[in-house]
Image 1 (tube, helix red, strand yellow):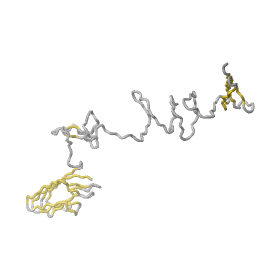
Image 2 (cartoon, rainbow, N blue to C red):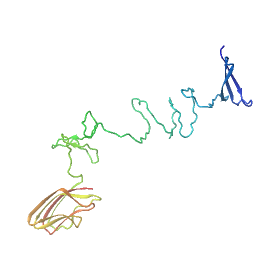
Image 3 (cartoon, helix red, strand yellow):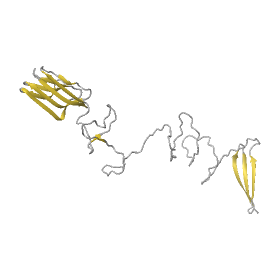
Image 4 (tube, helix red, strand yellow):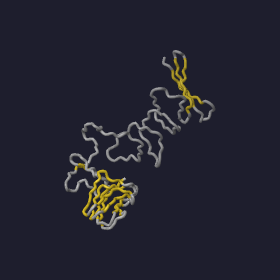
Length: 281
């Protein structure tokens, strides 16, 4: 004879319709002549279910669940596959701490993923290490080849502060100037006595560098180049008419920052002076 199964419902408490209904499933073992009650507590008439204990280990299918709210703090709700989400309201939305393990591929075309703040990026490394043979087509820093002839360089730009590519010969040797870009030149021919005559005015927070000097005189005279008005930097002693000199400094004469370049003669002798240099920190 098969076991009997019966289901009964009892209203615990008073007879108000809002009182919870307890459902009892009774399993009757005919052989043992015993009933086993399997009850669920707290089944309101509204149809909501209150689970009194934890879900058993393993896989549990509880159907379609609407989560009305989540308690503040850290909540571990296991492995959740979100099929769709409603649109976020306009403005700033805080959706907590989200770890995205993977994203689907973006569709072909233009994709607007909004305003993204990237806090950190992994280190970027090249594909060829120092002193290693280069293969393939790695991203490299390089210049453009210019042939040293009397034609305008193809690499020339139109104005200062424009971006410009480095220039090199066809063997890869880079073209460089032996001086910074702020170069200057001075020349003067006079028969009058010179006293602290300014060659180059002081530059704020910068120094002047003298690279070359040429002097000549039509009589005996001392020609002195100075830093400011008192500090000796270079001197030439002309002993007779036609005397002159050229000085080229492999290491330029550096003046103290914020000082001018001047020169003084010992008398009113016709003379010529030419000087070149540059200004830099």
